[in-house]
Image (cartoon, rainbow, N blue to C red; front, side):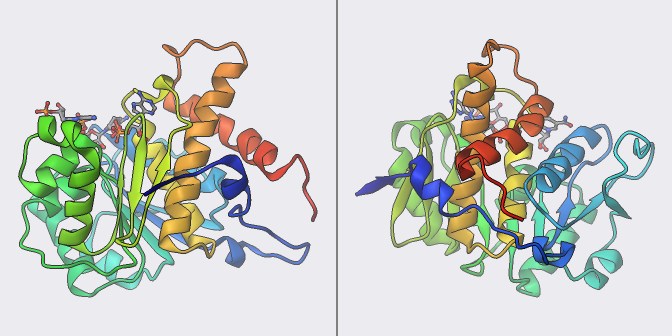
Length: 279
Ligand SMILES: NC(=O)C1=CN([C@@H]2O[C@H](COP(=O)(O)OP(=O)(O)OC[C@H]3O[C@@H](n4cnc5c(N)ncnc54)[C@H](OP(=O)(O)O)[C@@H]3O)[C@@H](O)[C@H]2O)[C@@H](O)CC1
Ligand SMILES: Nc1ncnc2c1ncn2[C@@H]1O[C@H](COP(=O)(O)OP(=O)(O)O)[C@@H](O)[C@H]1O
C-alpha cells in the first residue's frame, strides 16, 4: 500500500522553536555543491536550507568568483578532503553542480568509507555513486534521484523506470539500504518498510534547479531533529506546496524560477503551521 501524505501529516512534522531556542537548535548543514560554471546550484541548495530553518548553513563550493556580496549568508569552504574531514556537521548534502571529477569522487568516497551518519545525495553525487562499487549505505542516508538518476543507479534505462516507478524505487532501496526519494509529478519515498507518496507539487517545478532547492530543504529539516524519512517527507511536501501557493498568487506555471520557490518557503511553512508563531 502506498500512503499519501496530506497537509495534516506535514503540519505535524514542522520543527518547533521555543523562546529560548538558539541557532544550535537549527542544526548545522553542510552543502557540498556548485562546481565551476554551476555556482548557482550550490547557492540554491544553501539558500533553501537557510529558509527552511538550518541554524548554520555551510557551503563547500568553487570559491572562484563566488558572489559573496549577494549571498553573504553562508560559511564558505573550498572543495577539499582535509576541509571536509575537519568539519563535523549534523547533515552533509552533496551533489548539485558538483561535476564528477576524481577530486569530487574522493569526497564522496570519504563519506561512504567513514560512514558519516546523516548524508543526503543528489544530482552528480548520485551519478558518481552509480560508478562506484558500493554494497550498502547507512540506513540514515537519503538519495533523491529523478527518473534518469535512478536509472543510472540501477543500470537500466530511464524509460523502464518511467514505466515501473514503484518497482524500481523498491529495487534501489534494497540495493542501497537507505531512504530513496524518486522525484517527479508524483514523488515516492521508500525506507524499505513502506512507500509514501507526495503529489501536491505542480508542473511549474519542471525546471532546472528546483531539485537543488529540494535538497537544501530536506537537509535543513534533517538537521533540525526529524528522522531521515520525516525530513524527506516534509521537505518534499513543502517544496510541492510552495509551487502550488506561488501559482495561486496568479503566477503562470511556465514562469517559476527556483529563486521564486525559495522566496515562497517562509509563507508556505507559516500557512501550513496554521498562521501562528508562538515564540
Ligand atoms: N543553476 C545551476 O547551476 C544548475 C545546475 N544544475 C546541475 O547541472 C548538472 C547537470 O544537470 P542536468 O539536469 O543537465 O543533468 P542530469 O539531471 O544529470 O541528467 C539529465 C538527463 O537525465 C535523464 N532523465 C530521465 N528522466 C529524467 C527526469 N525525470 N528529469 C530529468 N532528467 C531525466 C535524461 O536523459 P535520458 O534518460 O533521456 O537519456 C536527461 O537528459 C547537475 O549537477 C545539476 O545539479 C541543475 O540542477 C540546474 C541548475
Ligand atoms: N510535472 C511535475 N509536477 C510536479 N513536480 C515536478 C514535475 N516535474 C518535476 N517536478 C519536481 O521538480 C523537481 C526537479 O528536480 P530535478 O529533476 O532534480 O531538477 P534539477 O536537478 O535541475 O534541480 C523535483 O522535486 C520533481 O519532483
